[in-house]
Image (cartoon, rainbow, N blue to C red; front, side, top):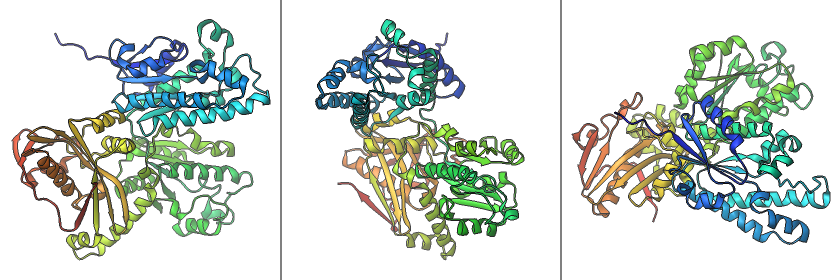
Amino acid sequence: MTSQPQRTLIGLTATFTAQPLIRPLLAAIEAAGGAGADAEVVVADYNQVHQTLMDPGSSFDRPPDRLLVMWRIEDLFGSALTAWLVDSGEPTELTDDVRQLGALVGQVAAGGVPVVATVPPVPHLAWLDPLDTRSSIRVTVLHGQLVAAFLDGIGAAPVTLVDLCALERRHGTERAHDTRNDLMYHQPFTGEFSRALGTLVGEALAGLGRPVPKVLAVDADNTLWGGIVGEDGAAGIVVGDSFPGSGFRALQQGLAYQAANGAVLALVSKNNESDVDEVFDSRSGDMVLGRASFAARRVNWDSKADNIRSIADELNLSVDSFVFIDDNDVELEEVRQRLPGVRVVKVSDEPSEIAELTATLTGFRFARVSSEDRERTGMFQVEAERRSAAAEAPSHADFLASLALTVRLFEPTEAHVARVAQLINKTNQFNLTTVRRDDAEVAALVASASHRVYAAEVSDRFGGYGLVAVAVVECGATRWTVDTLLMSCRVLRRGVEDAILQGIAEDAAVAGASTVRGRYRPSPKNGQVATFYTDRGFREIGEGEYDARLPLALEAEHVTVLRDA
């Protein structure tokens, strides 16, 4: 009789009675189809947050697969908060205690358990007039200091944050709180707010390890601006500070914000290219976005579905990572039918709804943004320069020799975990085993004594590619096994993969190993690396297993490899 797999255990520890959150939390996970859709929630004893964080397994029947930490300042530090309000002293001790709490949360996440933690709301005390300026301003300032201390304690640990303060602000403090239930059951929130909070944290849990959208493909006419430039002319389209153009300007501001925080903008418009360029040139004072804001553009009369697919090919991204924003129902429906993985968003004809459109893109809500994410648009634009140089070079070898390629191979730290996990979960083509790992699992491997994680940052004469390659190696006494080796398509066929494998081999030899073993696990998209190890002299010893005796000699002359001391 085969045993049934265990359900995903979500451990919940809170400073208040959290049972009312469970049903909406599970409903949100199920609706999102996220990791742990078949889940159960087990609640730790009331207000035992510190104890749970110091030993997560002790608060539940077994160590949790996910940990949800929810806390309020007035619950954990009520006495200290009251003393500060009455005595008007410095909150140094209170700040230190909150920083320590953040450190405990970060410690659990770094140890391999995916953690979702709430950011506390402004303290709500039944006996204190919230409009009493003798205290209200001080409490607001204190809240900011304590949130900063909490985040400082977490540091770079892979913690997904849910802003309970923002949710309460959106909902309204009076509608969120129930003083009677708080006094009777330590259940401070109304039923309506508990459902909203449960749903939000459920969405955060469902999103653990799930890639966020990468590309916002946007129309021009009646999207970036009001009107049709081909008919109204650049001077006649509506955009700027005055209503209704202010709605379109607000949409552009939202798109610019998303681009600054990891999304890539692509322009997809049925138009004459010269007309669109005239808008960017002659109305630049009214516009937020300019030509340089877009990593790719298709301004022509072709099908928008075809143009989106073309941009995906150009950027080496899956169409499933695209969001398409347009005002035309016919265009949206064609993309919906032909590219079902693309999320489509309709632009309203109401300026206030246009202004709020980017606020509805909730797929970005819990994204953890790396430095590479923030620089992504520039990287794609530089890549276009590389493609031009490659096309002009007499041969591929000449092109490689001209690049002045540098590979910095290093062991990532806690600060790199989010980017490493992002690559592990999104890379498909050059990925030898396609093993997916969330932030917490990556953090555990980085800290592991029996594994070594490698990361590679690549640059050339055109600029930096960022952190674009990852390897995870099991370090045995006589054999090192490459469990994971993956790389962004942007650096394919440039010798980066050989530099990484050579670095692993050299470290293995220094550690006393005599063999390096590589693994290949076929997937629907990684066929191009099926012969990766045999092409480099490895001997197949079993299905998907390849061995090579040390030392190896793989580095190409055109690559400069830097190793951290």
